[in-house]
Amino acid sequence: MNLTILKLRSNQIKKIEPLANLSRLQELYLSGNQIVNVEPLANLKNLRRLDLANDRIQDISALASLEHLTELNLSGNPRVDRTCPVRPKSVCRF
Image (cartoon, rainbow, N blue to C red; front, side, top):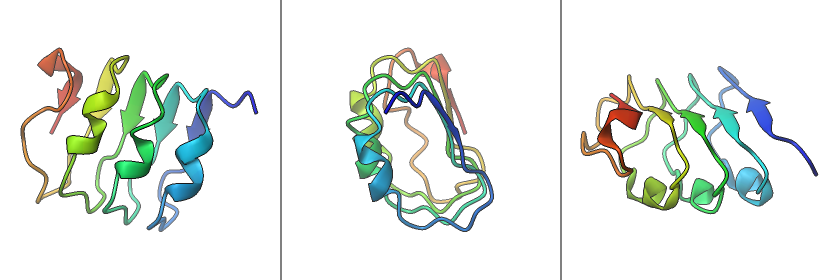
């Protein structure tokens, strides 16, 4: 599948395991859902933009492997560790 942009904002999504095989994704918008676990995103190596605002995420360490991110939005996740897992740190918004 050649899907490069996927917008799934505000859909009450809890589990994102089905997205793990979308290896060509460059932009993924998942804000306003009920996502806790972001580990399935760790293999999406082509991601440039990732919006996970206003979800229920606590652990973002799995995102450290996403080397091509230019934008990572984690705002509105009250329990998330405020240490940006990717470089440069300016990529992250809390």
